[in-house]
Length: 150
Image 1 (cartoon, helix red, strand yellow):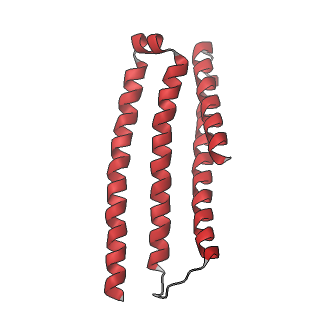
Image 2 (cartoon, helix red, strand yellow):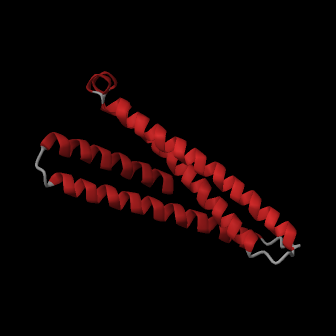
Image 3 (cartoon, helix red, strand yellow):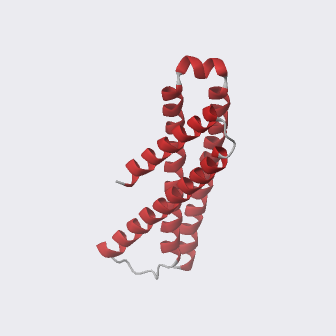
């Protein structure tokens, strides 16, 4: 049974490695998207609404891959503590799913807190146009996180 357990955990490690590669590609996509949208000509042509919609899509990709990573880590933890007996207990599975939801909620709260802190730091600069952009971004993230948690 111990050999089988290590094969299961090796599978999880391979899966986590694949997820990590995707996270790196999404991080590069995020950087490239910000660079493209930072161009005055492109942002003027697309408008703020379209730029924010594109950024929202990239953030959604990032959040979903982070959620997948958390779920796989959670599953690996349960497999590592598995005693070899098959248990078909719905309560345990519900517990696993609720733990994943709690992790996502905590991640969303942390991002929202960071955005608020960045917004407060930017407000002290006194540049109205910059404050307006930050306020729009904060509003967008708040709507996104509120919609995801419902």
